[in-house]
Length: 594
Image 1 (cartoon, rainbow, N blue to C red):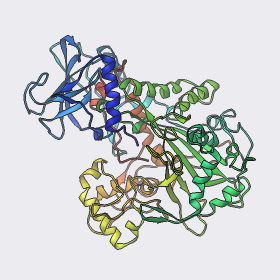
Image 2 (cartoon, rainbow, N blue to C red; image 1 turned 90 degrees about the horizontal axis):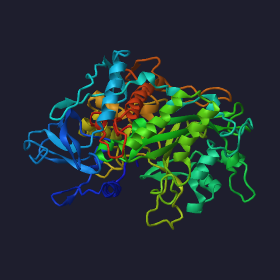
Image 3 (cartoon, one colour; image 1 turned 120 degrees about the vertical axis):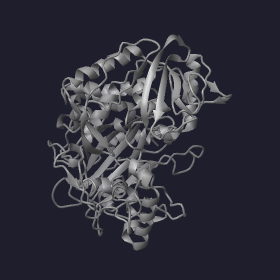
Image 4 (cartoon, rainbow, N blue to C red; image 1 turned 90 degrees about the vertical axis):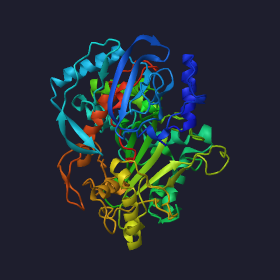
């Protein structure tokens, strides 16, 4: 869901070409992006550019790249300026020599913005001698920060591009990335607390308002209260998801029965028993605009269930039931992605929780929460990617936490089906069914999967598919972490590959592989701030690998700060500018959906 498909990429590319009045055809064929590169671009070992003595229609500079995999002789589509173009290694201009592994393309470099960004880096290097280096969401070390001097650009000379990960230290994570301030999550005009009665029912950041916009009754015909009840009722029955049985957790009926209803019988979403815990910017999940991505990452709302009348437990209003609404952000150009990053960055200059701050934050969130934010997702036209649930409140006769995932039933040509537009429990991202740890045969199958896919697992590009190559169903419909287990197959596997596979699963990320006690953002009492996991904050590090006992250091927010800085300072000022920073930017490996 995080990538535009090839057809949509071509629609955008065609629009850009028409706007530029250009024709970009090679060998009589239309240029198409490789969709796999949007979140997994090929690693570049060396990059430089050369200004042309005279601008041409395609741009003003020659970009030259060499790839880490030493590929040669192919054509690679990139967004080079006014439209898509080819990096070429076939000896045709601007490439100098056939199949020498040096790829070249004419691109439209914004030299003024490039020089300004290079000067910013030089100035920052006077204050910060080292920068953190992350790999697969782990903090590896701190490396010297030595940007190249600001060059005197002239045509005919070649200038190396720096590998730049971003300077995280000027980013205020609590204002720009993970907002938990009570003055925000209890904003009286935008939030509502059913237990205390404080706030505004159906305010902009309430559970009821967000679900109403997601249901989008004018487009779907689905009443919002029914939309939510149908979603909740799925815990009330045994489900078959990808052939696996997901057993019911029928204490959900206590929540439904305690929920006030409107005169027409539907749940009254103005009285939704959910308390806002956090608003989260996940631009670190974005794609690479250089390779045609239309994905600027995600933004999320995190809610905790309330039990105001104590129907689930005799004491306390806060229940261990988290709902995370994860919205996709669609942006097509370097300029648009940069502008999105700068909107979040601007929050850092305001007083958190002030009228100005909250108004500006709502101006950001309205862009993805309101109905029709993504007209391509029919019938709801919602920007929601998925809704994830992490709960212990519905255990009943069960003993453990459970993680589930829901998505909207898209309809395409079948919008007349009753299921269209419903929020439905589906498989859990990157996570096998628990059988693959609960049986000898399952653990052997898991061993084979990890060994077969070791190379892709180690770089974060593997996929836990619905089925294994032999047809055995693989991805589960829910996962019960128990006390927190590691995916540890039977037999011999590479221990780093085992760790990376397990860390990318729902339960691995939430328990043993990151040293987390099930939730990264905790439920909270009124007037208090949600506690965050060590995985997010970098506290109490390192954590011990549950199998190999190797020390592993996490500081997720620092990694996100670094990526936000790099994105907000890309040297593109117009839609036709080449995203030079995207050449060497290190993107979040696509395996990490959480």
